[in-house]
Length: 233
Image (cartoon, rainbow, N blue to C red; front, side):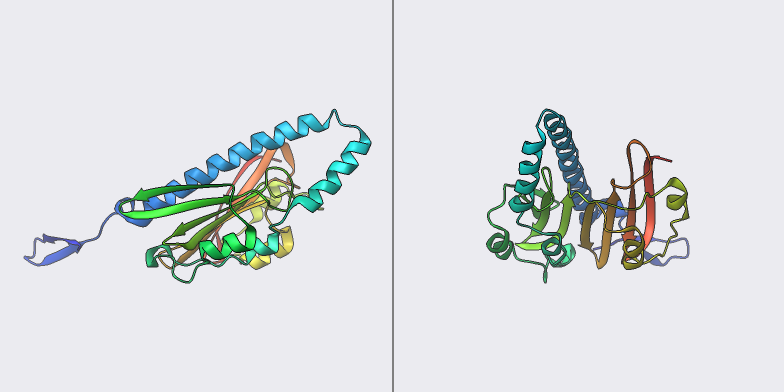
């Protein structure tokens, strides 16, 4: 129940909770931190893999490439089809954990946390099409999915996205229009909280700049609402 205070006019007024005291805010913070940690870990693995490959013969490389294509099970289309429910409605309408286990197999790892009485489970699958380091992380509450994350997915992008292009990105641009022009992101996070769909799309391939150049674009209810970049030119 909202706190009430007495105004100078003698009337009572309700005081809304600051956003940082709301349950959904802290749950979202925890999810983001876990996802970022997983992404950094995968980045390290990818670097290690790259180093090892330099010592492999051409024949071995060809064999390795063929093996990669056959090893992935969860496709980009499979990931896109995972339905999400609203965290504030116990994830109702989101994909069921048991159904995803039946579709994708047993996850490689799971973790749980409870924030202000709200329990969430983070489930990770690594049998993902896209190469070493690619994984899918889905967050559940009451067995229903409300957030999904794709990291380490390797794409071949024909065009080079420059800093000038990045600076021209405009708020309000629809997600479908953005990806139609610039292609699908290399990593993707989507969540549904409080009736609001939030998407963070990250681009690391085909980005012009120094080593490690990349950018993120944020979409709120499918409209571009923010952007950040690193080392672009």
